[in-house]
Image (cartoon, rainbow over all chains, first blue to last red; front, top):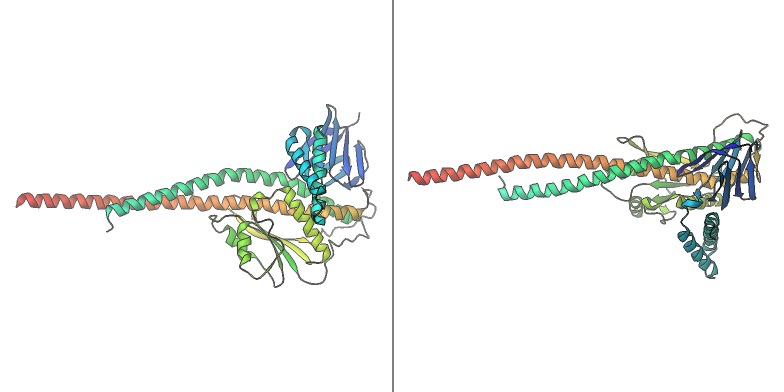
Length: 134
Length: 276
């Protein structure tokens, strides 16, 4: 299968720089898959599971915020956070999930708190999903 | 001449001080290495982000975003980043001296020293949620970026700038102020037929990315400020350690002189007593 160059950058540094066959990401418009020879493309990312298929197999990660850009065959994922499945702290994600759920149950919360809890819940679900222990 | 006991006590206290300053210097040195790595790591993220923003702007002729629009009025929001602690030479003060704040401006303090500094002044504070600069991570920067972008759109202020200490090298740190909003993009040629596909639309992508751009700048400035603080502290503590060494040397000299003088006096007294 054809491959393309993939770079994944976060404020913590360059997390991946190499060849990939396919990448599937959650954007604000829904899941998007990129293959080699994609046209030039830019879209913002939302919180979700990222799947990267390389010659060595599939890797999963939890990804949030930022954007995806394709320029002249170079695919860049510029994310606020990007954690490989094996680096995810499952216990912490579980705790965050229970906490966020409890916040959403509570009815005397402000609009802002509600939004915040929703984001936290999404993030923890993405983390648990990527690590395969939802 | 002070007594031998007094000199000895002073030597001891200076030695204790030297131990503390030496320890602080070592701690700052080891933390500085990590802070420098963090600056290097955060750079590509921000560079690519601002590159994309200017690409979007250039490739669209009829493009306008409230974030690039310079509106009437001169109400500025200043993000000020300084340290949480003192004992870092002129690090905090140099930054405060470089600030240009007009009446009616809003301050967004990051760092305990900034919060304390502005608490005494008659200025409005955006929020005091982020008082400890060392605890702020990328997710905090994201929420700061989002809330500032929202406030800008609401018209709470007409421009946004950030004051921080830029890290040139271990010996030089320069206080700097940089404008964030409205976004000033390179005035390059606009190419009419760009083939980049933006989803859902260029304007929507732009609006989505701006908060990330702001948080990227804040995070970058935060990393630089932290490294500057540590190297300023290291230099200050190195000087303090050296000075303590000098003081100890001169005090030891005094102590030895006093000791000799005492012995000489005792001898003279004995000899004088034997002759009688």
